[in-house]
Length: 400
Image (cartoon, rainbow, N blue to C red; front, side):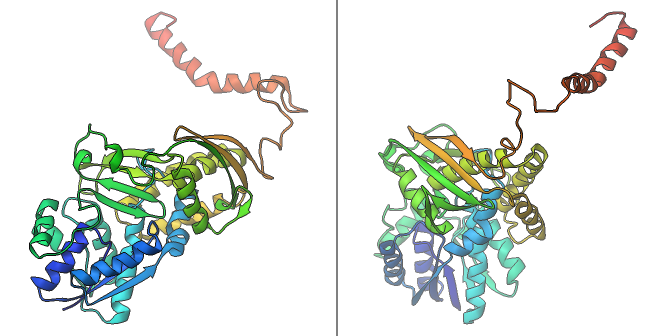
């Protein structure tokens, strides 16, 4: 068969090129979908490795702008962090990558598509759900999942074939994208062990102090330190500059789609700065009900994206609410970085609800307000609790 393989250049997809061509006799074309995290040199190296491993041709699709427009802008609007920690650094890409894989396969007349997802992870569900929704007529090959080989077995196979291993030797599973980088394997297979310093990538051996001023327009990042930038360029610059200060390291232990627990380490410098800044700016310009309702939907949105439901219509409904909520999220935030931690020191906006009132919290009420109103309001709020206590006292004969 003529097969289009979603190719990242890691151990799984390198093994797949060799297996599909040597053991299955398929004609394999590799497709690298650039969702960020690759330099120009790395993109060229991907093609060289794919062809050297047995691919007949290599394709590259730059999906960074589409990823931002269709996914990342909504993760920012929803302040999405899975488990209140992980900004869905790589999982957020998978539905779009599967869509592009199907799109290219159908447009170019391939017989089948292939992916390197394992049987024990979330990505297989994300790819299979997207492909079943968008291109059910395509044959889908997933030998890594079907064979169930370990990473050690895959490395041994490549070595027996006289083929080079990926640059890191496949010791860890590393996935890099616009919204961050994840690391899996070895220590992360436990709930206790920490990564050694040399296993980190973007923040390895880095640290220091600094600050950033991020400008937002309708909830989207549009400027960094006073310089207007397109969102993709801004995110890439923050990944580099904030990553150089050690920002964005973390561990996420959570529930997989399959019901088992999983753990990854991640580095997401831009996501850390932007999500922190965006949330504080929202506090200035949105009402409490807007924020709390949107945060609940943001949690659902991120959970469903994590589960592979990128193409579900409910996601579009939530995005419509996000878009409405961001109409006034325009302004800027100042973020201080120290020791790898971020602190939003200040926010300002022409839509500031704080500036719209002449009240001063803890000092004076708004002009024209009735001082007795707060007392009456407090007594109304307390009435259910007062009645509950009174009813209990009537039964027990006590005042407690």
